[in-house]
Each structure stands twice: as C-alpha cells, then as structure tokens.
Amino acid sequence: MKILFVTHAFPRHAGDAAGSFLLGLAVALRERGADVSVLAPAGPGLAPSDTIAGVAVRRFRYAPAPLETLAYTGTMVEQVRESVGGALALAGMLALGRAAVRRTREQLAPDVVHAHWWFPAGLVARSQPGTTALVTTLHGTDVRLAAARGIGRRLFRYVARGSDRVTAVSSWLAERAAATCPGLAPDIAPMPVDTTLLAPPAATAARAGVLFVGRLNAQKGAADLVRAFARVHAPSKLDLVGDGPDAAATRALALELGVGDRVHFHGALPHESLPGWYQRAAVVVVPSREEGLGLVAVEAHLCGAPVVAYDSGGLRDVVRHGESGLLVPPGDGAALTDAIDTMLARPDLAAGLAAVGRREVLARFSPDAVASRYLGIYEQAIDAAARRLLAPARATAAHAPHA
Image 1 (cartoon, helix red, strand yellow):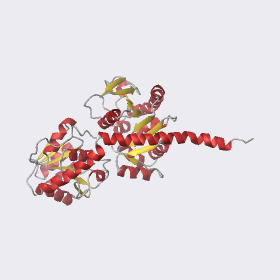
Image 2 (cartoon, rainbow, N blue to C red):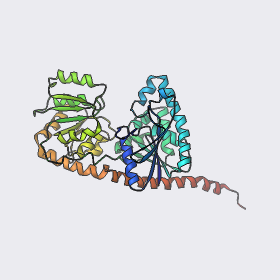
Image 3 (spheres, rainbow, N blue to C red):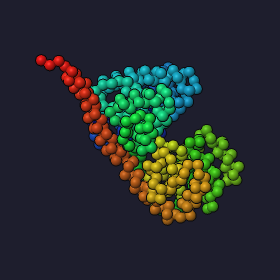
Image 4 (cartoon, helix red, strand yellow):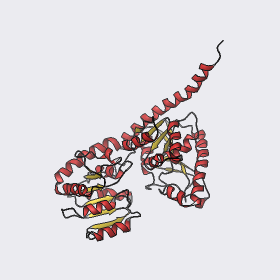
C-alpha cells in the first residue's frame, strides 16, 4: 500500500520534535510493508527533498523565503493574526499546497492521502478531488478551530464530508468534531509513542518529587499545580520542565506562596532527556484543560510513573480514575492537593496504578498497535473511495434513456 502524508508539521531532521509522532507512525507503517512518503511545507534552511529515518520527504515552496515560517513551530495562528505577511503566507500555503498535492499525487500514485490536521493539510488535500482515498486526522488544535462559528466551521464540514475516513486521536476530540459536523463519526485512533525510548528504569530505585512537563501557559495548568503543591503535606519538591509565556508569572507565584525554594524551573529540555525525569518522579501531574490527548500522561505511564491529571479532554482516554491513575475536577485545587498527597503517602498504591497504566498505554500507543489500526482504516477508506466513485456512474445509468 502506498500512503502519502500531507502535513504542516513533520521532523525537519533526526531528533526534531516537530510532528515527531508522525515520523513514528510512518516508520511503523513501513515496517509493516507500506510505502510512505511525506509532503510538507518549506522552511528556513530545509532542502526541497530529504529522507528521514528511511521516509522520503518532499517540501513545497509557498512564499518568499523570509515568510516561510508558518510550519513546524506551532505558531501559525499567531503569525497569521499578528502580521499581514503571515496572512499572505497562509494564502500561499493553501494555493501552492493544493498544486503540490496534485503534482505529488500524479507522480507517486498513492492509494491513500493521509492529511494530518484538517487545516491546512485537510483543506488542501480535500480541494483536489480524485480517485485517491482521503483520510483526515484531527489532532486537537484543529478541532478548536472547527468549533468556532463562521468560516472555520463551514470549511471543517467541507473537509470532513469530503474525506473517506476521519480519525481523531481521542474520544473527546471525536465527540467535539461530531458536535460540529452532524452525522460525522470519527474513528478514534491515537498516534504512536516511542516505547523503546520511554520505558521504566532498568533498576528499581526510589522515586521522589512531583513532576510537570509541558508549556507554561494557562491551558497546561502549571499555576494550578504550584498552588496545589504549596498545600501538599508531605515534604517534597516540584520540578517544572518546559517554558512558555507564563514562566515569569509562575516563578513569581511560587515565591509568593513561599515554596520558591522547592519549585525548580528547568526550562524546555530535549525530548530524549524526558524519560529520566519520568523515571525518577514519585508522581507526574498533568493539570491540563481540554487537552486533545494528553501525551505527557502517556509518556509518564510508559516510564512507570504514577499519574494525577485533570478529568478533562483526551486525558480521560489515558487515565482511568482509581484504576490507572487519579483524576480530579479541573480547577479544584483542594482535590489536586489531596491526589498528590495520596500518591506521595502511599507508594504501594501509586506503583499499582502505574503498572496498570503502563499495560494499557502499551496496548494502545505502541507503534505496532497504532500502525495496525491505521492500516485497517486505510483499507476502509479505499473501499469508501471506490463506492464514492461508483455512485455517480450508478446515478448516470439510472437516468439513462432506455431503448
């Protein structure tokens, strides 16, 4: 089977974090016999074509080089909103991306085009109707755009209804998408996680401390965690791994609450260094609101770490309260403090929950399991595309004059 990924985020080089889960999926699909290629936008210093971990990558130009900064950094929305250049670059990405999809499809003749994020990739791929099956995957930020009133919602419906299969990486995202597009029933199919890199420590060692990994912003909830941590009874420390717009405010909050000496800010760290942090933590806290999936919780489980999370968004797919971790209502500081205290005071309970969590995420998020799931979805999409192509022919035959 030949598959073409269309995406605005994909690793630019080995070890790059941008869309790294897509590379994991591509590699896992190749190991199961699929031929996977990638079409992505140009970016600063990137060659028109490349091969990363055995996956062929093509890149298309969409604007003058100084403006080709929309992809890979997670700042597309901000750039488009804040500058005329960003808006013009987006227009170029949509127009020239459409031409690139048509050209690449003609050259490679894939069985399936797999668009990651309905915008911009899904819209670009949907604008090129043809015989190739189209699968569109919703990852999170794009569903928020789809839920907005106006043009975003109309474009999302256009893409969803023109796709042969739509998938979402969590049940919460699938529900939000279905509410936005009546009649839509996305398949729930998460992205893979590197189960070789993310694993429990080789030797059993005492775990200590509370760990947060993620952007320091309101949605990720670092400030909520600092407030809850300030009330924790057990003597402990809090490590914050990540950076973001609320970094200074979060530091000031820790000082204001009198825990500045026990809250340690480490900034953004390379992804390959994270397993060591997960392996040492007594509890990993994920206080995110409306998280598309909750990748930090998945990674923590794989490393054998106990997890406390907000009962919100896709985190419900990853953490089952009282079975594989503890969930608390979003914004309930007292409940968050109590859950952290429970994990710190009862390491036996924490270890049992963590063991269940690891078994469950291995079954759902391992590259082999995810690749198998998507190969099945691709087959269904190919069948749906064949039926789609037959429908006009049948309609024409039904209305043809009879002798």
